[in-house]
Length: 164
Image 1 (cartoon, rainbow, N blue to C red):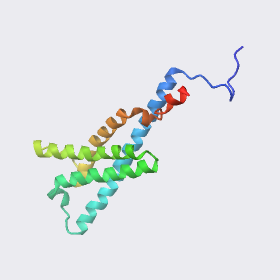
Image 2 (tube, helix red, strand yellow):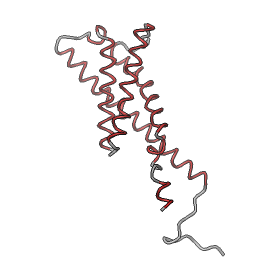
Image 3 (cartoon, rainbow, N blue to C red):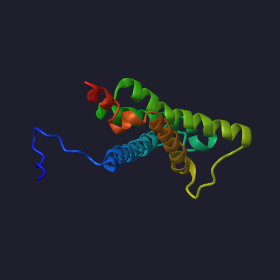
Image 4 (tube, one colour):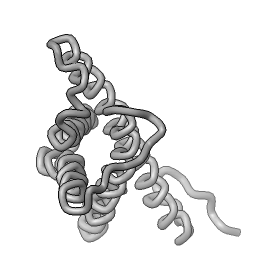
């Protein structure tokens, strides 16, 4: 007869659960971070471009595409930084993760300069660019998160705890 687990005896987990739980946490963290970056960034973009229009620059995006793409990236980095601060991520991870939005913007600017690449969207202006830019920014952020997989799954200190 096998004894039932009590508070004193830890439960044995299945290997699949040991793998799936961190992977699920990673996917949830990625979705949360992407939503925070894109939604928060678009809110800041709206404020910026409406402010520019109120100051007499209603066509700011069309006249300054490269600067506008960089502004989108910076706004998204700010949104990501605020969200990561709220979630109490370490400053180093906050800065590294937030920088992915600016890096994506710089890569898009280079593609625009070198290849004349400007996304064809059905939505005109800065909002169409933001809808397009969200994908590459989230992809680059996801790559960064994969590089730091243990941090974003909560397993970074797990090995050290088991060794003690």
